[in-house]
Length: 455
Image (cartoon, rainbow, N blue to C red; front, side, top):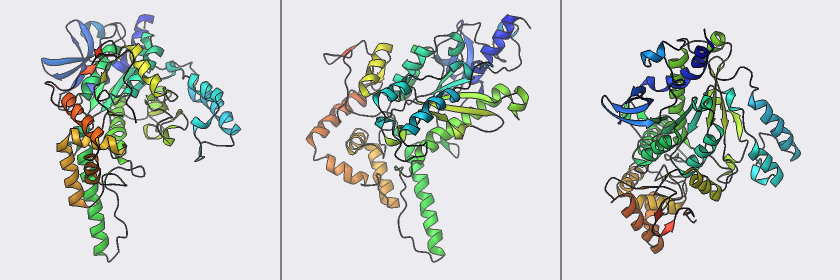
């Protein structure tokens, strides 16, 4: 096989077959196609396809079901793209991390471990560390469409200017159903277009029906009800009502709506590219995956641990091994907005009208003001929340019901004004909310000095 064909086989197969899986959602299937003289990831049915991922150079993008002219030039046997000679990045990270943690009298399992409490010099060393990206066969960029995801995308694009690295990156977004702000998927697709990164959007289901946060809460509430009925039938006393909505101790929404579905997609992607069975035996090693998350240490205790680790849920003994990296773990809010501005990436207008977070508009883990704002802007969701609380007897937040939070918000003039403005911007504009670009001016205020929500 010629050197040129070897290059095709090594570089092309991983990304090229990404969308041949044909994920079916409300918007239709997604697959790599050759259309209008360009390769790329398209979305939709038949001729009504919308271009989602920008095309890559033709001599890099190759797969088994590709254009016949290209198929003739590329080896048809699947190949792992990760470098055979690259050292496992986990080795260099542990060499940095373990002595540092030990110097504070801590271990990885210490409950008090928090990188925010490390010295400025140690935080700088951790922030400067980067894995060898050539080691991986797939770089999976998890995105919610929010500001932190955008900043992470901006950073990883700076690190992957080599086409060989660009060709192994995929952005993936898991939809949260009607609880997700309108137009979030459009923001995600815009990020894909602007960074030339293919995008996959997953829409979770329950028994074949599209689902989101509301449906997952109802499913859990029904399960709790059945458990309690069974316990009473056996003469047991139910001492404490289990919490049906996600909470800090029961954060099941992440696995139900995000990680669980992304794991299924990963398994499908690997099977589509490399077949079934023992890949370690077939190829001499497992498929290497780098899972990227836009999490920051300043947000919570759980995000202030090691910024690079094995992803146990996406790892098994014979098929794949996954490392998880937090590229912007040490960014503060100003760093995030500056990265977005420099990369010229669009962001959702929910930030401009006072929401501190994107994605889930009625998140039970959000602050009371953000949750109240979500209910005021999307009253149809608030009615469903109230109905679930009444029917199953639980509180939307662990400390307060949705009704209590909603009623208290009505006595807050400033919050009511924010809600009015948000409704006008997010709901009443024809075609949904705008996606503001960092080069535009909105309301006379230049986005070059980005709006940073207070509180």
